[in-house]
Length: 214
Image (cartoon, rainbow, N blue to C red; front, side, top):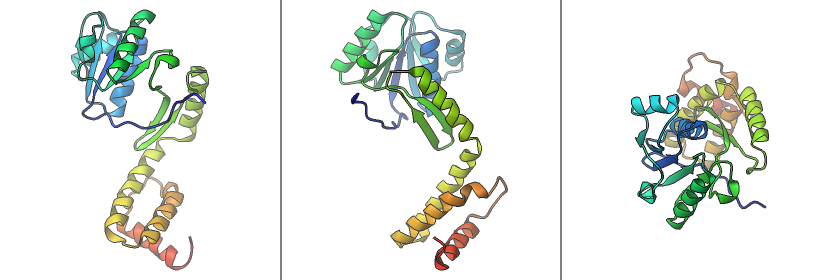
């Protein structure tokens, strides 16, 4: 076993620092923004045009220059993505001494976490990794998942979230709650993109349960 344990991190309000200004660092930054991270720093002497645009738009903060350990101060999540392997290893060693989570580009053995290939559909998050053995395979599987789980799943998850909130405040029987939400997950994809009434959907599900259609 490789020792990696899959989790999903909440990044809002957490300082994330990316070291590097090239294509790999750019991908890390875009992934953090897509995840909703709101305190992102990038450290490098120079940046790609895309990163420069992110800085100009105020989406990312920066310090132009080489790595110093002071850049790790108050960081929560760290990405070592420079084009210098020795610098990346120094960042990783310092971060781990400070008890920080660190990912080293293309070097799983030096990382305390791996960045998986991700497909996002609203609240639906699909992540796959080959634990550093084959990023190409991870990417191929990601593409397959993206084709299988299209944009309609964002609509489905929005509806299921709203229904779950309604069920939590209106249904006290725990077993019935579980059954309702299971039925809803089974049929959410059949509702199409038309507007629908949440209360009517709940009543329909309750009716099915009363009739024993579970």
